[in-house]
Length: 416
Image 1 (cartoon, rainbow, N blue to C red):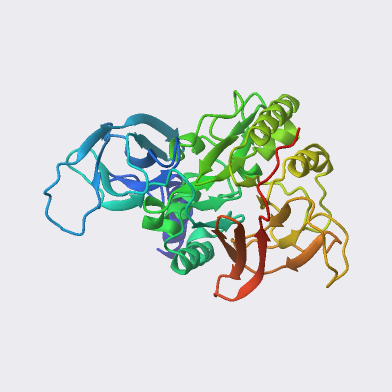
Image 2: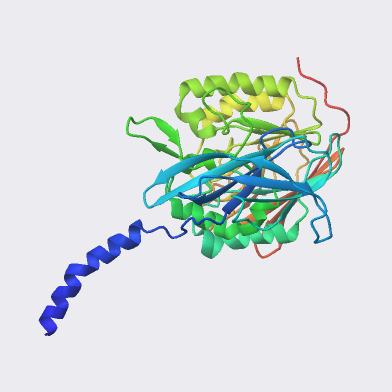
């Protein structure tokens, strides 16, 4: 009897393991999930939202009305039909829906919900940007990448708890580890939960958002465009990866550094596009985000080709911050050798790398850095005033780790 039992277990156990690998850990249902706000157009008058349902729920609609403290439904919401696409991944087939709310009033709070007319999300709030400048703040996070549910969750939740009124959250690439593994994106959404539906996301793709397809072509994850509705104002072929957003006198530029480094045509097109954006920039502040750092903070890394190409443009056109990830350490500097305590004349942007997830590397401690950190999860809060930008980096347990102010002493002169 014992021998037959052992044989029975030996036959069935592999089948059980295989079923567990295929079964989705975060299955889609008729009820909307993975709701996330992004900017696909002018932040003062538009607001994009995407969400997911199961493969049988092909219809998507969103309802929108001015936010009210009253629970009664005295205002009839405006209805928007979603653009819907089916995404098939191993063990995870689902519909992704996208709506771009248009015709909105600047500096106005709205409430919305998404669904199919029967199955609805909860009502969620957002606020449009002002047309001109008003002070605001945003959150910047380095690589999330691994262990979203168990460890990265504390980073995004601590950041939101610290500044729940931040106007958007910026991710500097490598949001997940394995490109097209749906369960990892499921953990990413588990960690952030309803925060994504209340605070818009700006994200730039990292190397872990890319893979080589069957033709060995460098390809962004199949989940990028269904999940994120970003502006399609970048170079052809890099839609929603290289793009820009103008938010209350700040120009935010996402450079797709993975394709920049590995595809010559993409580097050429991004260089021309970037210079035009920097040269013809009416905004007070300029922030660039990309995954790979111009100055590396990890031991043994150096993106020289990226630095040689981009640094002259950043300095010529007075970029203020360059926010990156990739190196799984913390680093901050202006790219010049300097002794500790020496007064530095700031001639270019402040370069930053940070990490919000648990994957950590050994820091380089090169001379370009005025502040470095390792084996620590961080989040950053940036407060933007008309003539002052205040940057603060915190550990996920709330301790202030690094801080500096950038002051605009005069209106930036346009470079020739």
